[in-house]
Image 1: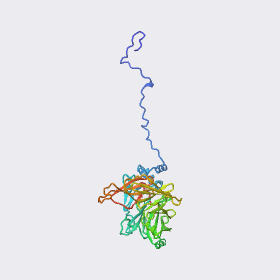
Image 2: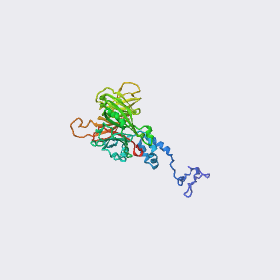
Image 3: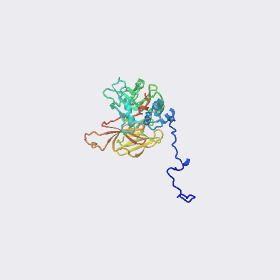
Image 4: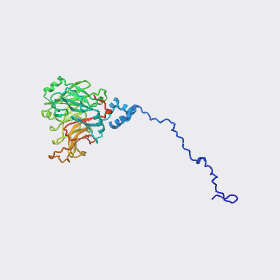
Length: 432
C-alpha cells in the first residue's frame, strides 16, 4: 500500500483526469526505423570476367551441366558456344555414351543419364546421312569415334548398315562424316604403288577404322583425323594409314602370319585399349595387337581355356592388360603385364558379378565401354519353341567401375554395332 501522508491520511487514488508521469526516454518504445532502401538504387550482381566464368564451366562435372548453364542466359551461352571453350572442354572431359549406330542411330533412352543429351543430338543431327556422296550404290558404317562416322561404299546388293560387307578383297571407297555439322570428307583411294604388294600377297580382307584423336588433334582448329586400314593376306598382315593433315596414305609394312592365323583373324571384333588395337583370335588362342603410334604388330598368347569364353579387352591398371569374360554367373578377369614391359603369366580372379541373369553378347566396344546385348533368361520362350518375341536390351558397361547402364530396348537382335559418344549439341565442336 502507498505510504501515509504527513497528516496520517491515505493518499487519494489518481483520477481519470490525472495522467501517469511520462516514461523515461530510454524506456519509450522505439519508433520504426526509416526505410533505408526506399530511395536507394537496386543492388547489382557482381560481374565475373569471361575468363573466370570459362574456368568455372570447365570444372562442371558433366557435359549436361554445361548445357544447362548455357541455357541460363545469353552471356553464358556465348562463352560455352565459343570454339576455344569447346575444344578445352573436349580435351578435359571424356565424351559420354549417347547411343549406338548401325543402320540407324539408336539414341540412349531413360533411365540412361545421357538420354536428354542423346535426344537433343538426334533432333539436331542428320543420322540418315543424306549428305553423303551419291556416286556410290550405298554406304555402310564401319566405325564411329570422336563424333565422326567412317563409311565404306558397298555393292548395291547390300543395304546401308548391312554387315555382310564387313570383309572386302579390294580397297573400298571411304568417307568420313560428321552427322551434327552435316559435313563429309572423301578419303582418297590407296595409291597403286602401295596397294600392288598386298594384292600380290593374296589379299583376303581390308578393314578400315578411325584412329583416336590425340590431345594435339583436339586443340587443332582443323580437327584432323586419321584412318587406319588393316589388310589381311594369306600369310601376313599389313597396315596403311591416312592422315587428313597431309591428305596422303602411308604404308607401315607387314608382319608374317600362318595361313590359319590369317583366316581366324578375318571375322574377329576389334578392340582398342591403351593405344593399341587388338583382335582376339580365340581358335588360335592368340591376341593380335597393333600399336597405333608405332604402327607395329605383335602377337600375345591368350590364357588357355575353352571355346565358351567371349573376352573383352581392357586396361587392368598398374601397367597391365586385362581380358574380361562375361559368363552367365561369373565375371572372370585375366591380366598380365603389358606386352613389351616384362614377361609374366596370366593371372586370374573372379569379380563380383554386377549383371542380371541374362544371356549376354558383346556387340561393340571402345577403350572405356562395352556395348552389350542382353536377353533375360526368365522369358518362357528361352530354350523352347515359343514364337513370342522377347524384349532385347542393350547396355553400356563402363569397364573401370563395371557399371551397367541400360540404353535401349528393342525386338530387333543386332549382331554388331558401334558405340557413339559425343556431347550435347550446345557444346559440340565441328569434327570436320
